Amino acid sequence: MNIRTEISVLVCCLVFSCMSTSGSPSNGVGSEVMALMGIKSFLVDPIGVLENWDEASPDPCSWSMVTCSADGHVIGLGAPSQGLSGVLAPSIGNLTNIQTVLLQDNNISGNIPSEIGKLSKLQNLDLSNNNFCGQIPTTFSHLKNLEFLRLTGNNLSGEIPASLANLTDLHLM
Image (cartoon, rainbow, N blue to C red; front, side):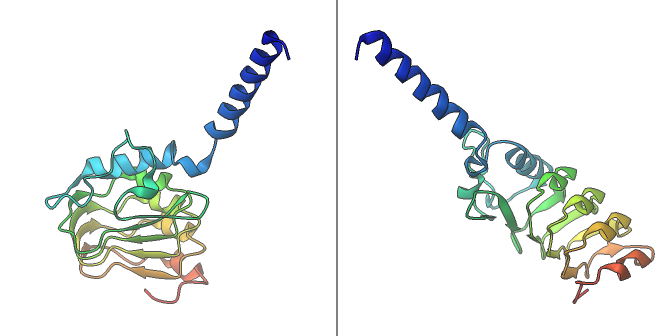
């Protein structure tokens, strides 16, 4: 093989390699990292449980309190009883593969973000024993896979949205 052919083969291999890895969901780069960084930026973390959440380390599967699927998508966020305060960022709605959010027994305040209603794969949501206020978002009626919802021990007001009765998989509320 002459040098020109070898260089052409090498360039083709490099291009193919870049194309095959740049869109890979397993590398965690993209909207999930940005969503988690948004969540972190709105929270106060006095004991540093979110300390290793770093966009310079773009694999959220290695971050504490984050669970990922075999193909590298964020499917769980679990930080119960960690002394977290601040507010829950609307960017949580960009974790489109998430199935479980467990943030109970913290001091998170403000309104529950209506963007949670965009999480079509969400099965378990526990925001109990925080300082959330306002109403339960009506967008929760979009959570067709929701099985477990726990919001007790907050400062919520208003009625439970009647549309939650249409969530046929919801077993515990």
